[in-house]
Amino acid sequence: MNNTPPPSNESPLERSALYWLISDAWVMTKRSTLHIIRSLDQLLSVALFPIMFLILNRYVFGGAIDTGEISYVNFLVAGILVQMLAFGANYTTINLAVDLQKGIVDRFRSLPMASSALLAGHVTSDLLRNIMSAVLVFGVSFLIGFRPTAGLTEWLLVMALSIVFTLAISWLSAILGLFVKSLEAAQWIGFVVIFPLTFASSAFVPTDTMPGPLRFFAENQPLTHVINATRSWLVGTPSGNSPWVAFAWCIGTIVVAMPLATWIFTRKSLK
Amino acid sequence: MSVHEAVVVQGLKKSFKRLEVLRGIDFSVSRGSVLALLGPNGAGKTTTVRILSTLLRPDEGTVMVNGFDVKRQGKQVRSSIGLTGQFAAVDEYLTAEENLQMLGRLYRMSREVIKARTDELIEKFDLVEAAKRPVRNYSGGMKRRIDLAMSLIASPPVIFLDEPTTGLDPRSRLAVWDMIRRLKADGTSILLTTQYMEEADQLADRVVVIDNGRVIAEGSSDALKTRVGSDRVELRLADGRDMERAQALMQGEAVYADPAKRIISVTAQGGVSMLKDMLQRFEAEGVAIENVSLNRPTLDDVFLAFTGHVAVEESQDNTLNKSVAHE
Image 1 (cartoon, one colour):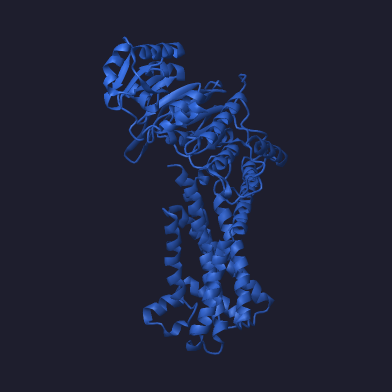
Image 2 (image 1 turned 90 degrees about the vertical axis):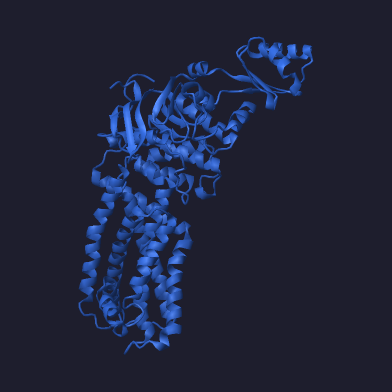
């Protein structure tokens, strides 16, 4: 070795900070997407659970639930879709917890990359997985009698809301994933939060038969607005102010949760 | 700060809550050399490596890596280092090739250089056949190799290896040692942590022994061993009643006797001729020897010599010394 200070590393490229942020996020998204393809069990578990729920609800409860002018299966699909999206978006918690445990996060943090790109990668992969699961869920819905009235605009609105809803839950999940102590905790926390929220909503039954306080909660919580808006676009039920409230909730959550998750992630590395 | 030093650590302190993990550590790694941080579990080795690679902030002290301050120039430090942690930090779902390419992009290298480096490392680390299979199907030794390859993708001038051979079988361990020697030959500055005196002895130009967050000894491994005492010859007698006679035959050598195990041990300073001599004397006197073994000083011996207590957290793994001695 001679005495000249060596270069930092082999031929680093000179580009702007923004270029690298996007490049890093893209690399992380590619990584997470390969995970989806190579761990089909995760995709299947995201899609199979709602499909099972869809079929069971349709044939077990269907006859006993009065959904007014529309058939129960037409009523049900919006609820199943949103529940599926919420559970799917919760995989960020699990996958982030796995990364943090495995030591690969330490490797990423020891690189000259924007380490928050890791979060973006997981969130984007939730989105891709949810899109694939949604296609499956709709496919099965059609098979068991789902007959939507939605036109092109309505379908686009359903897609748009599904995307922002997934992003909102994913970024919340990212925050959760940074705090959970174990993989098991990551799994049950999502379950314990999302399961009751989807039941105490308009997902599976109309809210008007619920007892007072529960009904008040069920009719005003964000998931109900997301479900009601989706249902109104799919099968033409009255929407009220739900579309606006739903979009506002989702976008508001993203605006808060995304920078918060990034901030916590960067902070946590420098204890 | 001198450009001759790849790493400079001065007065480094770190506590977690009330637990003092590092209580003021000083050492430096010269460019192109290998330094071993030797100590038992809980001595502060991993904390030191994590601070050097900007994963933790130091509470007090100066830490310079490749001439950059870890507190103020984190990004430059990260561009200068390769880190291989204690647990294989590889993406199990990706193939070896994809892992390397991902790292290359994150190190901000150009696609052409990434391609060339990936092929080169896969070849060098004997992963050609497995390169296109997901890492989760690899054996422990292969995972360690791809892990090490990943920290080298950007040819960083400084490499940190945190217990690079812990949990490896003897063959993989030797392969990793070989790679570390080749890296050094290429001019890379290396800091590695280990619990094995043998490993430090094999690889390091300088050894820093740490215990309980403090440096308790420092020097070349030869110098340390001279202070600790060199290799020991251990004789096990066939008959315990010969113990006293056997000790008398050693004539003034530093003898350690364990009558319960019928073991007599002496420092092996005289080499082979001394051993031959000794065995001849025993034969002439009719003292039957059941077994002779040569033992290298272990971490326990080092600790015994410098602190008066054995390495508390971990008992020394003697199988390492034996398996390596047999290679």
